[in-house]
Picture (cartoon, rainbow, N blue to C red):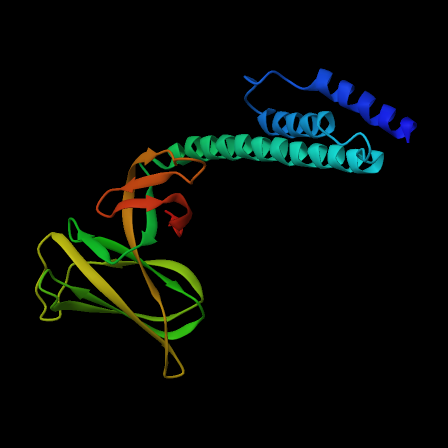
Length: 224
């Protein structure tokens, strides 16, 4: 028994030497807390029933595991911040370029307006309805059959009654079908990227798209 007590006492002394001052902080604070608790446990153990060496070894292994996880988290956070910074830098290359993003806005300028559609599957009929500010249908554009994916379209400003619509802001909706069955097509608005806002806390950067508003970089369906 005396041998075990001597071994545990030596371990306590060694750990006490390793233990950091109470003011220690930073990446090792969690490890320091474990070491402090383990030293206190050994220093206050029952001499007649000392801690088993295997138990001490097990607790030391736990300290190493927790410390490794803590260092991994720190590394991952640094990588996420670096990735976000790189994304923001790359996103600036989109400034001045036209993109298709989720939305239904349609801007008519000089008798030309551009929009887009995202089809989850091929359609034998795709029809775009252009609406004015009151929600009334101004024109209907038949795009015919289209393959699955993202594609753009143009509206020349002509109306259903043969007149020419005034330049300005309109909206549109999309009706698509295959074999008489409706397809859930997504409308895409077109706009020019005017600026980029870096993402906070590792989040993706946000684009300022003229005529549309703020759009996440990941939401860009097509760069035109």
